[in-house]
Image 1 (cartoon, one colour):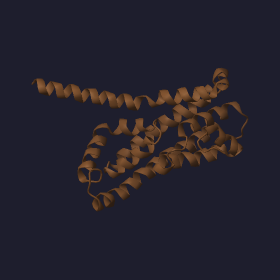
Image 2 (cartoon, helix red, strand yellow):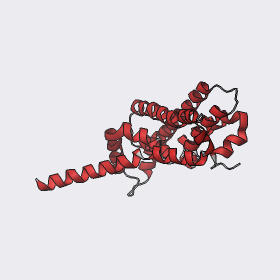
Image 3 (cartoon, rainbow, N blue to C red):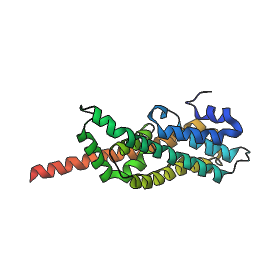
Length: 212
């Protein structure tokens, strides 16, 4: 089985695919060292599989437990950051590990909190990194949890429910790899677009300040 190939994973587990994907999604969102797992494509292909193949596993239940795994994984990542952050920054002092970095990161989440946490869901590796950074920067637990619930719902809804809906379209079934690629690329666009938008906004503000 190829752990980087969503189709291979789902095909290998067969009737236990939903449970396997639930475990994988949890680890893919919780820890940096497991963030290489194919979260987006797993959700999409699982949704499509549940729509096109005979299975006794109810789709609403599958969505619910995978949503719980996605939220739980990110929350674990946040708690890990909260626990390892203080001792990590106390023991080291360099250009990465210093109080100024924590302060800047905290200000970033205070300013863009909801957008940062929610949009990070749609970018591989980043979705495991952002929760840990949020914990390290002391973002309030209640705030992160709210953003986590929204981001997890949007992510599972777009990929898994979207895959289930598109599973009834013959064109999508016949061109599965292309469909997965298109969905992943399109869903990843908001994050870089937001980064560019903020960059242009800061440049415009800097120019206005110079003019005055």
